[in-house]
Amino acid sequence: MQAEQVDALIEETAIIAVMRGAFGPDTALELVDTLLESGISVFEFTMNSDDPIGALKAAKAEFGEEACIGMGTVLTVDDANAVMDAGADFVVSPAFQPEVVQAVLARDVLMVPGVITPSEALQAWALGVKALKLFPIGPLSVDYFKAISGALSHMRFMCNGAINDKNAGEFVRAGAIAVGAAGWLTGDGSWPLNRIRSRARILQNSIAVARGGQAFEPYEDI
Image (tube, rainbow, N blue to C red; front, side, top):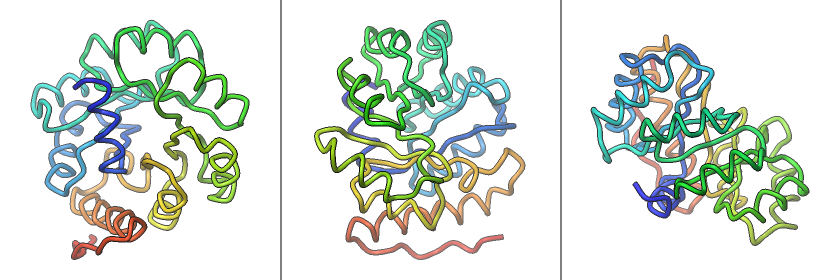
C-alpha cells in the first residue's frame, strides 16, 4: 500500500491492533485472521516480539492487501530498512529519532514517530510526517492529549500506551485519528481467540459511539 492509502485507512478504521510478545508467525496468522473477521484490518507487529519480521512476512503473504500491516518499536535505521524490505505498510517508533524518520520517508512509507511533548511534536512534524504517535498517553489521561492537541491543532495524533475499553473512545472523541491497542486487545500471544474477538467488538463499539454512530451487537467473551 502507498503511504497515503495507509494513512487514510488508519484514520478510517481508528484501531490499530498491536502485537507485542509471543506472536510468532503461526500465532500471528491466527490473530490477524480473527481480527479481520471482526472488522479490524490494521495491525502492528513489534520488533521486541517473537520473530517479528517472520510474522510480518507470513501475514503479508497470507492476507495481502486485505490487511494493512506495519511494524512498531523500530529504533534504528537498519531495523527500519529491514522491516520495509519485508513489506511493512507503515513504521512506528515509541520515540522521535530524526534519522529513522528520514530513512522511512525517503522510501515513501508512512512513518509515525513517538512523541510526548510539544517540542518533540514540533521537531517531528517539521520533517514532514503525516501523523504522530502520542506515547505513552494512557497513563497521562485524555486531558493531557487535549492540552497538546489543542495547542497543536494542525497536527494529527494517534494515541498509544495503556489503551483499553475505558479510554479508547475518549481519545477518539477528543480528536485522535486512531488508537493503538496492545495488551488489552491482543494479550500476550496466549489468549483464546474468542476473548480477542469479544474485545475487538467492545473496542469497535467504543469508537463507533465516540464518532456518533451505533454500537454493534456484542460477542460473548470467554
